[in-house]
Amino acid sequence: RLDEKTARARFVACISYFARSQCMLFSDPEHWDKLRIIHCGIVPELYEAGAPGQEPGQSDGPHFVFVGRLAAVKGLRVLLKAFEQARKTEPGLRLTLVGDGPDRAFLEEAARPLGDAVHFAGYQSQSAVAGILATADALVLPSFAEGVPVVLMEAMASGKPVIATRVAGVPELVENGVSGFLVAPGNPDELAEKLILLGADPALRARMGDAGRRKVREEFDVRTEAARLRSLFELRGGGAVRPDP
Image 1 (tube, one colour):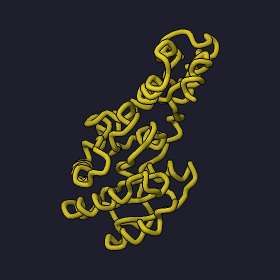
Image 2: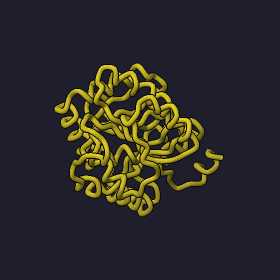
Image 3: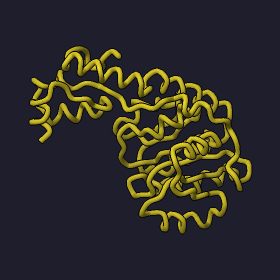
């Protein structure tokens, strides 16, 4: 049980304030000071190096990318509905779905009326994902549930704005209206509105992309987070909720 493990622990590393709040809910208040924030992170330079380009076989037009498992929890049926709506206003929009999973056959059939506007790239290596992000104009993650998704960090480090759902720890990474847009899960109308807005405004995409890159550099660099974690082990749990590196 979580409360028993928290009681025995010297400290508990939580990946977000949301995760910390859930631990607080299931543990005795006398142990709350053990709950510390250590973000997941990436090496930003691995994603900053990519040069923008065009996905092979696809025509020009604002290019949105999803990266993840093709499963119900990712909200992809909502995304396809929103994308179809958005193309009525912005017919040049394109979408690449990177990943595989149990919903792939259904999603491919659902996307058939959209023709080559939707591309299924299948499973890709980490380096290939970095290359695909470099070709994108924005990343979209319409999930019903998440933690603090690393793929959002990767896209933001690439200088891409993101559209994500307002769930769990996502708002701690994506600042609505600054580095991207947060939408309600399961709402295709709101998602379509943001697809149109980003698709039609290159200057907005550039501003949001720059803001996202700064956010990841400052708060989600895995080397800094590893140093914070090391400091917790050395202090045996002492110090602030968000430890110094």
